[in-house]
Amino acid sequence: MRIFIRSLAALVSTLAFVSMPLMAQEKACEPTPPAELGEQTVNTLLSELTERREEFKKNPEALYAMIERELVPLVDLQRMSELVLGKHADDASPEQIDRFAKAFKQMIIQTYGNALYGFDDEKIEFQPVDAPEDATDITFQAVVITEEGDRIPVDMDMHLVDCEWKIYDGSIGNLSFVTNYRGQFNAQIRAGGLDALIEKMESRYGSGVSDPAQ
Image (tube, one colour):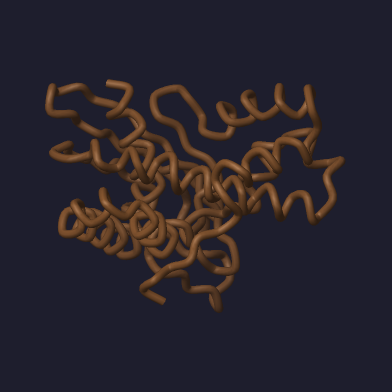
């Protein structure tokens, strides 16, 4: 079950975009409808995973590069990083925030990228978005149905950034991504400082990956 939850978390960021189209308040801003963007992203991600599963097992860097290319652009990493750091973000320099965001991105890519292998025959039910048409911040809800018939609720918090829908938090069941990571990192920052945490993350996950397809 733990493996499946991690696999679900690997895909949850894409689910938020498979929803009813919502437009920004300004007429000049016409973001790609979430339904169109989400369906394309999910299909591309799962199709490429299916076709290249054996290749990815032999070469994890190719998997990480695919996730960075297809999934990462849909996430507001800067905002998510600030929320994860919480009060520590107020005292951090722009350079520290930038380094943390890059290391945090690599941690997410590698942690949930490896867990994608466990996502196979699950089904997804998308719920209607309950928000005004001119909303700029919404919560999208979905339900993932496992092979055993378990129903796992998924919520994603999204907002408009430069006329594009971006994810800045989400939850599986009652567990928020931001709250979960904030609790983990807060203890480490109190013990050794933000720079020590960043260096530890960079040492383990790196600060960036190259995409051989580009």
